Amino acid sequence: MKKIKRSAFLNGVFVILLIGLIASIIFPSYKKAKEGACLVQQRFIWKILKEHINSGNKIPSNLSKLASLKYRGTKYEFKYSPNSWGKAGEVLLQHSVFGTHIVTFGDGSSAILYRYYNTEQETIVPAR
Image (cartoon, rainbow, N blue to C red; front, side, top):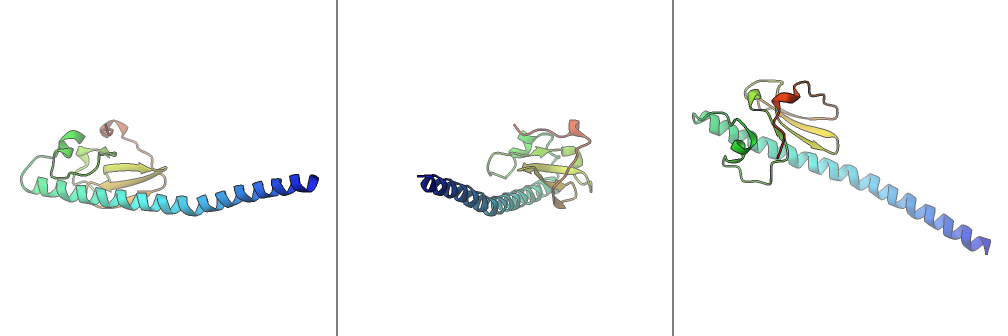
């Protein structure tokens, strides 16, 4: 009787360890895929924004005006700071994926940041 209980316990521990192992393999891959997709989306939006400004139009002042441009993607789930356009080192677009921040700067460069401290919170318009 005790051997059966011990065997069931060991099987349970094995299953839990196996689930943990599978999750540790799948989750980082999923996170990297989400980061890459977000980075591509931000680059595309930046190019549309650049075309819009180069054609003589003004910088969209908020997220809803940015959404009215040619870009017709999924719902915007990022922060937008129009005052950063054309400025290197200032965040224009920001999106968070599982604690990682994917940012596009005003000069068009982009980065994936694992630690990010926003010192100018009031200038960023939150996604709605």
